[in-house]
Length: 162
Image (tube, rainbow, N blue to C red):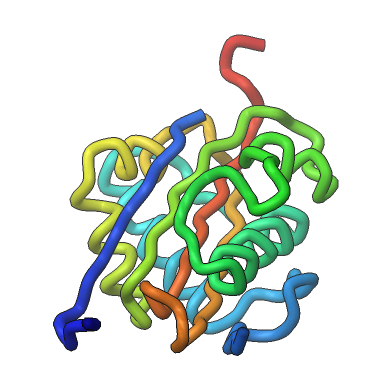
């Protein structure tokens, strides 16, 4: 039996009917992506980090992952075809393997999702990692799935050890 209470689940890796904003190949920012970017940069400024900018290949990869999670009704960092976030970013055309990913599910709101990430220590670590310079954001919804809304925040940058 399904309850009507809102459930939320977050996952992190540091380093059916779908209602997505555009297609999985979309690389243009949506209002939700812009809101996540704004909140991310606000948190980064408070931590003394430079702003991140939206990157088309990271955005496309994040959107594809959110769509995959919604379509296959799961939440995780490994895609339905077995690829982790680093592999997905590379396949999506991102040149660096220095990437981090936050995923979440359960909230329709970008602000509520960002609050979940920013109040979770491991997720916040990605948000305020000053070595990340670029960001991709994905969101997809499937009202027939367990969580309803699926989010991906995919960070990229140059490895500070290089």
